[in-house]
Length: 238
Image (cartoon, rainbow, N blue to C red; front, side, top):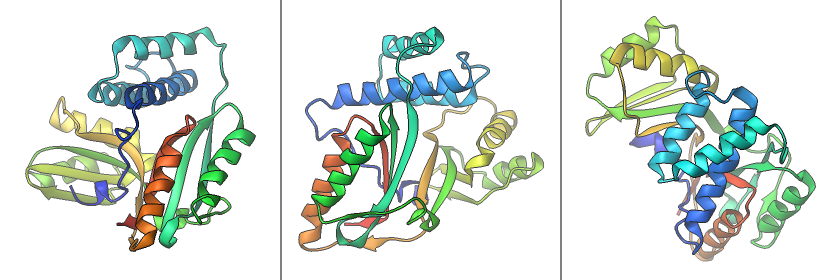
């Protein structure tokens, strides 16, 4: 599905506690989303798509409901987003998105992943300019002109659109997420999205070869083991 997968998000299935990690990740993200934008999925488009994504990843309903109820209570942890950028093994560019209730701890943990794998953490903006921050929608279809017309009629800024193997992939700036999703569902009815999220998509790729491959895999595994890490984006081509 083309550029939608260039960010090569690493599977967490390598860890023995993979399910617990996935549940925790979604629980934290749903809590923050509900607290910020409202508890009703019908009125909070981001929450609705997040719940749909969690269900696709087989997160139990009770985990989802618990996170929303926790947000309704107004107490509990006060998670905030934190983003770290830098250069991974082999010189690849990396963005690490976190949700944290202790920024100092999280920064120390993430920095340790960089330093222990001969990577270099940078300041904000170090590599972000080499990624597109896109809303990405992937769904079954073959009439990309119909889709493009629907988006343009709704005044959506379309970055790119692909039609491959019976799947249509739409890229828009992340700020157009809500408008784009509304335009698609208005024009095409109820859509089952294969992908419906905001991602950092690299503009190019950096080959990672030789001894750097093992170091890169160790780097990703170390980041995935951190509870605060939500998503890892990179341009590495191993």
